[in-house]
Figure 1: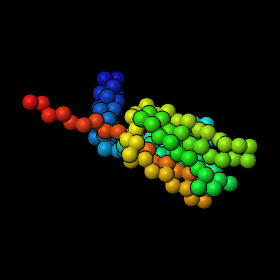
Figure 2: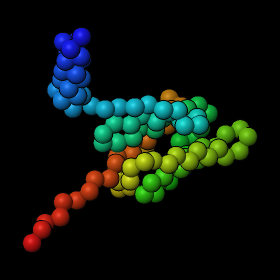
Figure 3: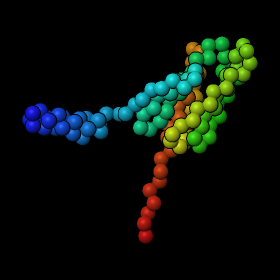
Figure 4: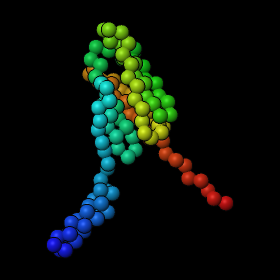
Length: 116
């Protein structure tokens, strides 16, 4: 019994310290019509817009939010995505190919402060 408990705890610690810390963390969620993949450094938002004209797509970004406006047959379709990490607004990129809009949203990084 004690040996099994020791083995279980040892395996959990080994997994956490030596495996999980080196593996990129990634989660994927569905947010309305968008699929949002998150890793340690960025979010990647993918949304289908098969009939859209790339010149009419609008991507707006704020410190914590991404707004996508896509023309559709029934009018302008707007998707608003809120993030749990601040966004590096200058680093956001968007690409439209084969009816799929993909927006890469880097997470903002803090800056190191020199202590005097």
